[in-house]
Length: 148
Ligand code: DGI
Image (tube, rainbow, N blue to C red; front, side, top):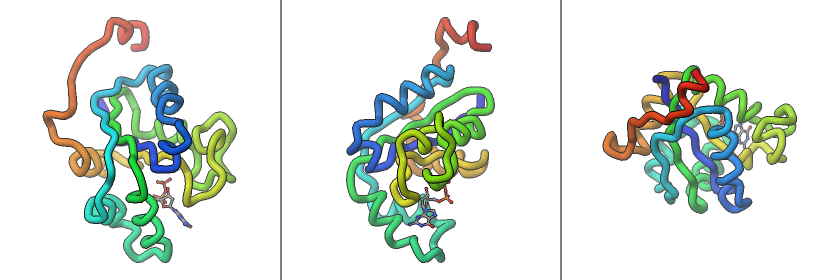
């Protein structure tokens, strides 16, 4: 089953949106296989956002993501990588559709509430950056037979 890495960013944690965000993915039918509240080190932030190293906003991005607790998660389900990106909405909340997380709760691009892997390759990379293998659980739920 496909897995993705999702993270409620410091602004989302401060705004008490963890429960709301977890609830959306649960109700969709995805399965939570790992989660933790954590403070990201500068070293981890720089690795996580390595693809943006040359961008002018890189310093602000690292400072922001390390500024307070984040809620890191791994979710599992069919097509979860692309579907989670759709549920998050466009990067800039001003352009994100209503009904998406960023469209409903975000205002500006630098405080866009949630991160989600954008490909199979980045999901693998990000999951292994944030979680040890023994922190991820495999289990089934009776309702899975009503979803699939
Ligand atoms: O995968 P996304 O989070 O949707 O977007 P991304 O990988 O292009 O960018 C990563 C994060 O960097 C994004 O969630 C918010 C921040 N960012 C992107 N573009 C800008 C930006 N931050 C600032 N300040 N200015 C930008 O133009």
